[in-house]
Image 1 (cartoon, rainbow, N blue to C red):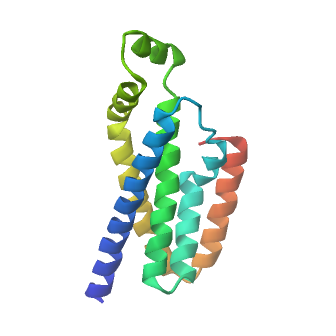
Image 2 (cartoon, rainbow, N blue to C red):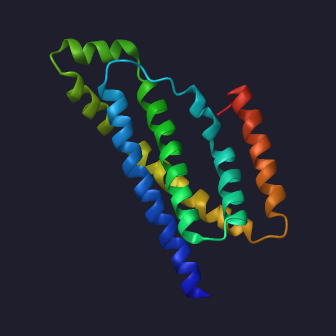
Length: 163
């Protein structure tokens, strides 16, 4: 029993870290290019909807390797959304000020990443905790109902953009 729980704890951690690596690489690629990335479709990956998806994955997927691969993909999308929201929430005038002071676009991208590093680690920890909470919820008798209810509430919050 303890070995299974340790596999779940460390597997969730490893899949979250793998997803965060890909999220940083993809986000840096998006930010370092000049055109703005439209991340409105990523609004669906708010915290409640992610918790519902994780609960349903824990409940319906029996193979741990497939589950951890799906967690890594979900972690990637969740963290890309959180990173891009943090980066694009910076005022456009501040961006122009930094670029007019002689910084290149890559230096600006690195500066913005360093500025949002604390939020990134907080969101990384948040996804890991959501993964563990979803596992514990999936052990209940009503895990499927809770997962679908979380998806519906997350969808309503997304439509109202109340994130």
